[in-house]
Image (cartoon, rainbow, N blue to C red; front, side):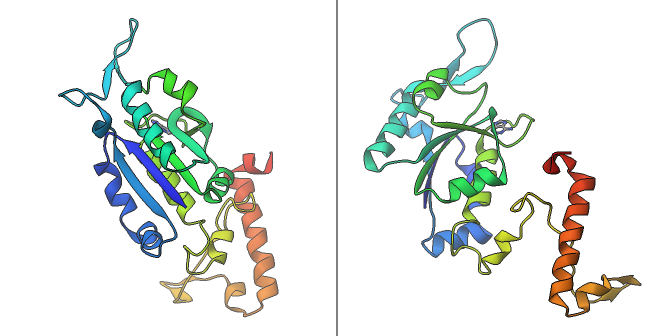
Length: 225
Ligand code: ADE
């Protein structure tokens, strides 16, 4: 899978994309991630990527020309499954959408900034708009990092124990059950007896009950309640 990220702040993404699982996925050749500095696609002396919004409202807007230039260049080199714009008014991001994106070959992530992008970008260049939650970030970079992290871990071969992605919260529409490790007792706090029983059938039954109970209590909306 290849992910191209277009941003005015590539520095913000270097660290989250350069460590842990995402770094390993790139080293193993399972995922390629490229950061594109939008300023490199400007033509004026000041490398201007934004300008004042038309109309009475204050605020800067990312200009259409450099975005058009970088997207056209990338599209000339390969076919993209989606050109995604990160924005608080996009489609709500879910595990289901992460699963869908993880099956794609090539995607572009365009990070919004300031008041957003010239709307013609959204009308003519973007194929999908994603919000990571009902709150406003200073820019789309952190949203892009969230999307990349959640997608890359689902690409086959990225996680060492593949089943661990399947047992994540939300994969079956439920929150994950609680997990414990050694010691079985600490400070008088005990691990549930069932988990050290060695009876895997009973453990699975307990885990499902816990998942349902936690989902009903913490996120009843996931059960349609
Ligand atoms: N940019 C600013 N806020 C955002 C959000 N909540 N989701 C995606 N992109 C954003």
